[in-house]
Length: 166
Ligand SMILES: [Ca+2]
Ligand SMILES: [Ca+2]
Image 1 (tube, helix red, strand yellow):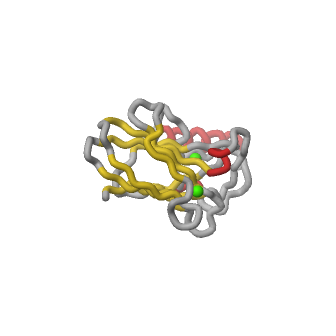
Image 2: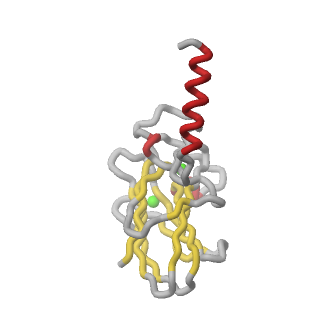
Image 3: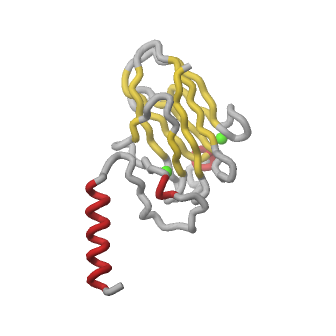
């Protein structure tokens, strides 16, 4: 392709990306090995300032990769009396050992956390809401959660998160 056409194509694709800029826009700019899964279909949510809003009962796929110590952030609103089950499951072929935490609306207190109460290494926890407000869920790998200098950056670190009522 001629260079000017290449630039034009890049500008166009950038404009297209900007025009559909939502919280689910994947960040595929991170360097790393070629992924075993199509990461362009996995939305990333790496910022506490812009957590992905969860719909209760609708599972989302995520990836712990793209940086040495990736943490994904999700948010949901809850009212007193809500009862939830939260699972973070590594699908077949995934290299992730998931680790999940649920943060209170104060942003500092951990309500619940789980490493492997589910099948295998998967996270599975139940919690009841007393304090209404906006809760944050963080997902990372067990290695990253356990050690301050541990790295876990594999393109195959796929997971599926599901927040459901019970
Ligand atoms: Ca991620
Ligand atoms: Ca785990």
